[in-house]
Length: 194
Ligand code: FMN
Image (cartoon, rainbow, N blue to C red; front, side):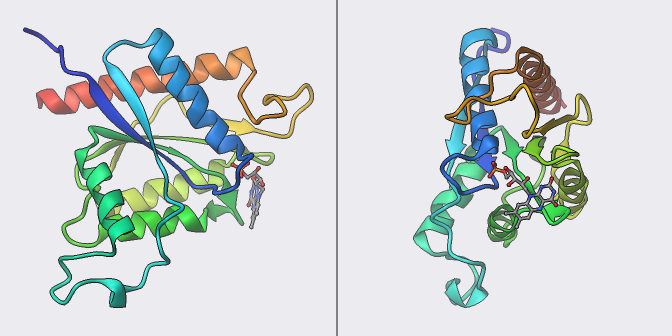
């Protein structure tokens, strides 16, 4: 009885580099979720294998996709919600993330109706400008973003927010991240009830 089913969240990182701070945010989110939030599991979904968007790679009727695209789309479809972690590139959404979003938007749009949360680590504004572009993209895709708390983190501060392995070490940021995850969990549950 009740809400016994575990919510599954697909975590997507817009940065492909090994030492990515945004990837570090996802590792931290997974740990926080496992250690101090019940009923929710975060799965990292790698977008690195995706080819650049090119509709010539689609099947004749536009219903089949290259294998890595098919795999990515089905992981998005299966997820109860999405957690985006992405740097800002030139004031906007990082190209690898936009590429992944575009692939999964091809009909049938895998993002439709999904609750989602955004976090970002970057320069002075912590990637904030890219978050508003991502929210705008989500309008057309019918993604439903949680509004608060907003999570932007300047990754280049002293004392450092990340250790030398790009793991988040700042207690205040970890607490904020936990609040974001709780907000996403609450939103997913509310949408499920509706
Ligand atoms: N940081 C910003 O805050 N705003 C930007 O507009 C911005 N543009 C960038 C453009 C490019 C092409 C690259 C490679 C980096 C840019 N940066 C910008 C710096 C990134 O925020 C920084 O490299 C960050 O560490 C990337 O995230 P990651 O550690 O997850 O890879």
